[in-house]
Length: 289
Image (tube, rainbow, N blue to C red; front, side, top):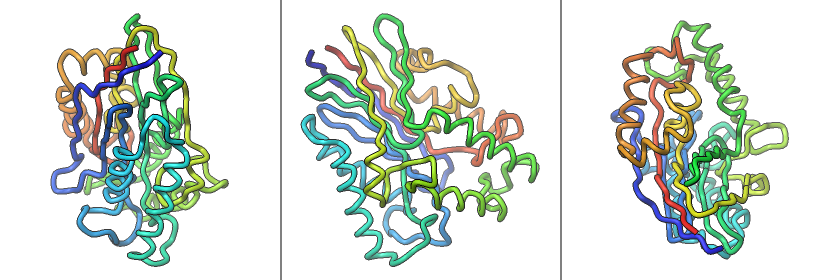
């Protein structure tokens, strides 16, 4: 069966005014995806003109994928090439740096190939898919990422009494050190997270899953910021989120998210997290056979 993939709408919103949005999105005739740059843990920024190194890697990867992700391309090979090229660019600018300072990003997307529709991903970005017959699917490369992060965030919040005055946990030396230790292990056999960044071998761990679709389906591809409505705040399930995106648009979902982050629980006491507000990006996609 030959599928058609159409982007209905998209939205990206920075979590904090005045701070760079480290999310990117992209699409072409047969693919749509979100790239979520991970907040940098280094002492300084190296890549200029993007606001942060995380924004740079997300932008670089998204631009490459929008052009090069065609139905016949071997996706792991493409991601490995992007990572190798990004490593060369970063090293030429930054020189040798500790691994916790290497920029990286999560990835989630849908693509149409000769074999049908498939999900692909690295890290904790998510695809929520609503079939025309009412069935729902949730796809992510790291299904246990939310539980792990919330447990770590809860330890931080309980120890310091909240997220922190800056609206992010990185101002606390103990939490920063723990985050750096975990970041050092990313994209290594000693870690549990494989992400898109400067390590070509991460592409060997790309999550891919064929998606049987009869008739058609609608999907929201999103960074973990928007996914918090389902996983953290639990104001809707996967199917409801997609239906709301179709009927009311993506902006009301982001408005609800910001209300929860900034007004309902600004200190993370009820909903533990490392940042008061996260960058939020979503692509609403229609797939038909």
